[in-house]
Image 1 (tube, rainbow, N blue to C red):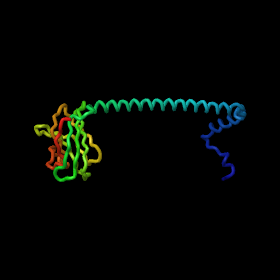
Image 2 (image 1 turned 120 degrees about the vertical axis):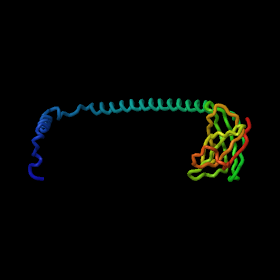
Image 3 (image 1 turned 45 degrees about the vertical axis):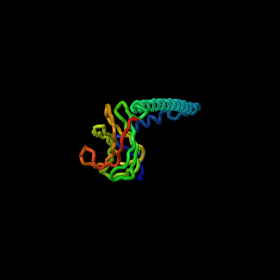
Amino acid sequence: MADGEWTRFDPGDGPAVACLVETLRDESTWLEPRPSLEDAVVGAIATARGRHRRMRRRVRGAVAAVTAVAAASTLAFGLSSRGDARPAFRGQLTASGSLRGAAGTAEIYRSRSGFRVSLDAAGLPNLAAGRFYEAWLADSGGTEVPVGTFSSSTGEITMWAGLSSGDFSRMTVTLESFDNDQAPSTDVVLAGELQRA
């Protein structure tokens, strides 16, 4: 470092240097803080921390209350949309076509939005991309209405039929592919008669 480098100033630094010199000349810059200042700072921090803890408790309480209200609303909505606790129709489905080991039970519940269809099926293997199972309800005249699609029979399957009324006599499950054909395929894997429960 060259001699005197620390003392060289840029012409634009003049006002800043003058302010620094004035600050260093002021006697209050060199005063010792009062002995009670440390206690005052620590006390202020403790008070702020106490307020923060109380605020956190209030926020937690509010979140708990909102969560409880949301859970109650969800339960109420679920109960109201679920409709009847007893099924309106039920039936046993047996294997048909290519999947001889398949079987299932179906229960159909009335709800405010139509019918909830609960299918408990076994023996339907997972399908490759582009293939799916589709469930159908048929009335006594043979008119079939689609109620939902799925790709495996792991666990209970819930589907919906948005019908205002229905008198279902039969349920089938077909093996479908993405082909833009809205009619049920002829590959029926499960079928069974439905009885009023």
